[in-house]
Image (cartoon, rainbow, N blue to C red):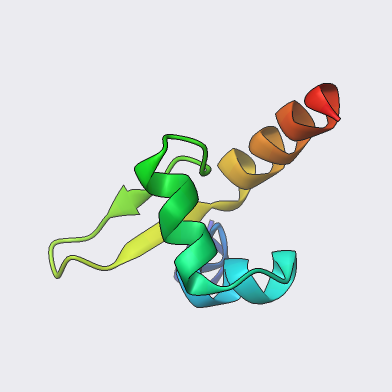
Length: 65
């Protein structure tokens, strides 16, 4: 897997918010309540979400709908 593909495995909080059509504050509220998809915290403090974790989280959300 090349570096470009590897970096697309993870998305930013902003990309997630656009994709799910939610505000950043909603995402951080979910995160505080333990309801957000798993995140990877980078050394600089920014967050990334693995695409696979997002897909699994969305599948779990379907079960509760």
